[in-house]
Length: 407
Image 1 (cartoon, one colour):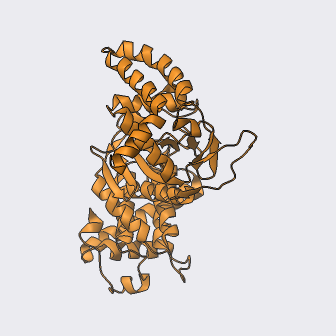
Image 2: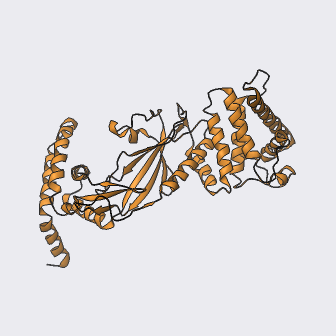
Image 3: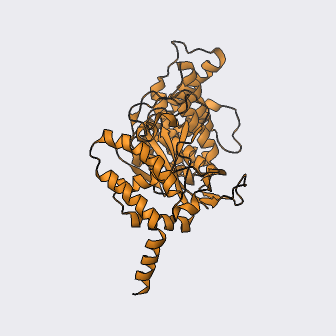
């Protein structure tokens, strides 16, 4: 008998109780042919398997653990043996392979989690990768519709077609064996990428969606989900909510390739904070409840973007932003004259809104056209990778955006 055969025989003897329990569950499962029967059977089978596997090697060594859930979170292990075992059997994994997979997980002591954020206002047709571990998926409802207790009572309903941002992160170590008297883990756990890094991605994705879409975009909540193949993982259904503002009530079909393009540009953009504030104002304007607020936010978006830079005084703001927008986007003198005029109209409407609180019939601005122009301006800046040298630009120096900025 060779070494491998001897080791397999020894393992089978050591794990005889666990194999017997798993094979018994597999035999019960094989006799079930209707969903209703499966649902009734599973509830009792899970409770029984939790208790039985907790006393069988190799699972018995991990019946009492601290589970690290990422970003400093942890909890005492609860019975997941039954759910884990039945899920694996449904996948038709043989009991011997289930034990091997669990032993590999225990040796690895690292778990994969996902943070799932519905993107209110955006609809896509197919999954789309934005970067390593960062993906857009078409339907957020598949994550947030099961089961009802995963929702906090205050969570907003998801508009039909809402897509989701999914970020994967690892937690290492994933678990620590727990002494009976222990009140907290002795080890610390690392999360990669951590909460702040994932939040930066979330913010950049929202801004990219605002540039790629013509509508409002918000990501007000997250749900956390461990890899279901991991037994030593927990925290399924945990949520994080951000302060709720107005939310888009419908989704707009959006090209994920455009989202990815703008996401990459924003991630590498120099001095992105000012640009981010400008794009955020564009997003707020799309949720405005009246034309006055919309004009205010659009005007602020244009002013933040076009007045950025050292040495920009407030003198002649309307002329400056009109000239800068014209040279940023215009391809010839006639085109620049139109852009200059349209920006002046927007800034005039913004000034009236600030000083009087109303937009009169004398306001010569179409806000939907102003939105499109401000979006072009912001795209024109982000596609350059940094804010232009405005003085050089308005003297005809530097590249003039022609094709991409006008999309």
